[in-house]
Length: 434
Image (cartoon, rainbow, N blue to C red; front, side):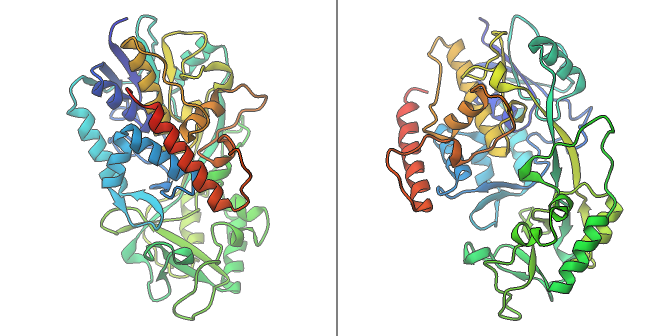
């Protein structure tokens, strides 16, 4: 088979896949339509645009996302390397300057030998070339129609939401303060405190605020990790204080007390000019966001550079359709990677992009399949999205899907540390010659 691969989509998965293939001497035609046709969630022409949070999650090995990032570093992930270079303060999390991150990835891919970038919509799937479909959860209607035709499956979907971003200079720091929860990190988060009266005034306006309408023929399906703040509020008047607005682990230095509720803001760019409102994914109309979120103490004069948005994410029924290399069972030349597989989250998208690329490269180079067992976090997520089940919903990195230890360890931190150590040791043995 010709050593040329079509990669569809220059998001996180597609960018990683294209890079890994090209690095292994395989010619890549990378299709990306953003410069001519953007999805509802995208605004920039850069590749690997982070449309929701600028955080790639925890970097701690006591966290499954942290373990997956470490596994990707061991495998030589270009995107994680770029993320590390574009890191911004976020405690134990790996958060990045989103423009710097995407701009650097774009520059690398555009200047890389073996990669030809085609800036147009991909709509026809050839039978004589290997194709990696990494078109993301916002795959175009035409392409998804083709995928449905080939697989005989209707699309699955859920709704995802992104949080607003405000300027630092518009935050009232006479009220807000810098601090990381439980003293972890160097106090990188801005905390907006609320007393009980302020909280309930905010809560009452939030639950009655006007939301943007979804199409009337679509049943609303919300992914738990990106639940809109108004939906959280509607589930109970104190629910937010146990979620995005929880005060635990924070002591207000202006009062030396724990506040009734706290809204946290995380740095969104390297210069510290922009901050996103943590956990405030929303489907409120833009005017309502300005009105209601400005009720948060210290955000009364906030300048919103981006309002929260909500969009439909589409994924295939991977557990029925894909084998352990993320190749279609009924179509030998088509592979999938990224969130379209139902592997949820930024880091999982990168991981599936790399995993698929390694398998395609091995196939073209006459080498054996690269299959990771669920001892590693990457192996666990691939196992989750390819093991047939009655009800399939998107899943991100977590220790619940990784193979259990042989011994029962009650201390959670120790258990997770041991799982991570085992995973890293297993992965290093598995990649000899990869």
